[in-house]
Image 1 (cartoon, rainbow, N blue to C red):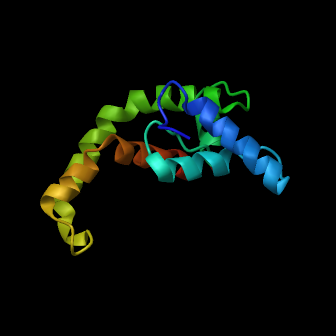
Image 2 (cartoon, rainbow, N blue to C red; image 1 turned 90 degrees about the vertical axis):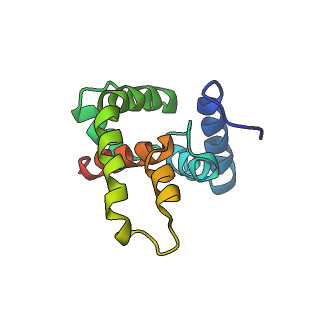
Length: 131
């Protein structure tokens, strides 16, 4: 499998979910596939989670069980909140003393300013509010 891009991410996640189903016979495993691929590459993969899905529906998203729709709606909601997430994450450098001991200010700053980190913060917001 080559690089995952914004143009092929939906197909790659669906294909891996289908392979998981062939091997494990548990149904289409979109959640597992998206999590596995996120670990591999982060952006542009959006992690599918049923609790996050519940929160998205509460926020007004119309979902149809397809990863591509979930990802589109997730990105719409993320875009609305991205400036606030970026601002909050930038302030995390001020609490460097709570970071791993080998973390430098430069690497911590790089991490908290990265797109993948902002996406994971939003994932957590959805997850915590999806109960």
